[in-house]
Length: 260
Image (tube, rainbow, N blue to C red; front, top):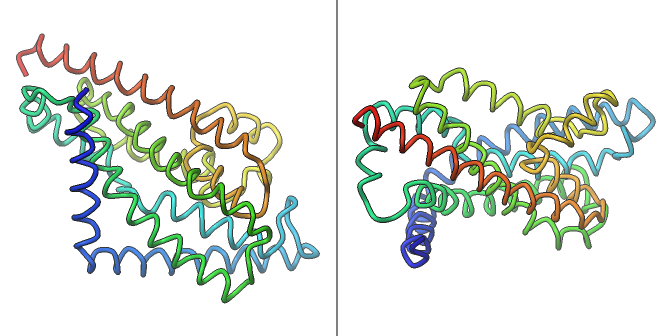
């Protein structure tokens, strides 16, 4: 693994994202609309239920949505489909001829694109939450939010690359992309805290990796001091990295067998 090449890819991608100010503005505007709508609905629901839902106050729910959405909106939602198109077009086959790892170069490049976005989005969301709902329930937990957001983005990217490797065989990633997105929406806690799901479904969600991609940082931002969430995220990042490496390795061997 060429660490220098990966570091350069990360830096270059981040710089390009920052330079594209128009794209950041559009992403932030889209994000604010989503956050304002969802958090408003959750505040109404909490107020109608005596001020809280599943242990979340209206303020906590607002900070939850601000964070869960920033972790997911900052990433290309069609990444699996894009990778599938690159496999079908032969772009991946050409990249495999290079000395640097295709998988890790693609992951760090996407991470570089996502990190400036997640920072801008979360800061915009935090300003909105402070304005419409109030200060964070426990400002001390915000210390854990930053590393948790990075792990959430990384877990999402690794997971998408692992699943996208199926396109070495399927060629069409449309259905796979759709299922992934819905899994993050519901079982990942993107639009609803997992504590509000039925007990059986909540337990299933914590067995799957999706909670690391939205729920974990959102739970922390909502005022819950739970450092073990970071440990769980890190463990899943390692597992997903191994899974992605194995999947891409198998895909590479398939391309070699069928002649690219």
